[in-house]
Image (cartoon, rainbow, N blue to C red; front, side):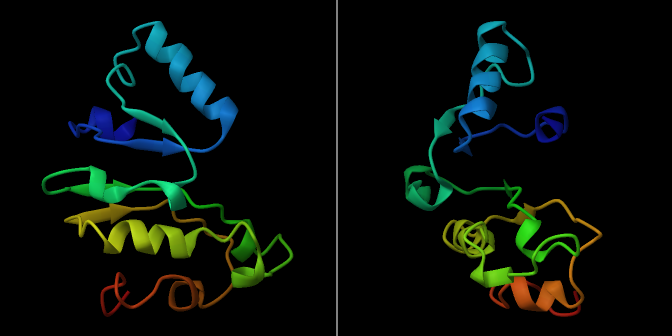
Length: 126
């Protein structure tokens, strides 16, 4: 919703969680201005065809689960089935947006940036 408030037009909103999708649909049905025009795709982002979006993309925003890398979790990192950072990297790599945004969770294992985000999408010095 923040990106809508910032003036961005959503060309795809991909969410697999049924309750989250139901909430978006209910708010769309109520005519809520922030989500009214969202093209919602209830799907796993790994199955979504990014090539179906034509033209340049300004921003890809995503919120992969932080539990695989959280200090409070089991620290399974890439061995955790919830590790969606490779999917995020693919979604960013393929359409080559001008920018990407992910939430930064403070309580993550040390060195997470270098262990999670591949160099192909992580600029030097970050």
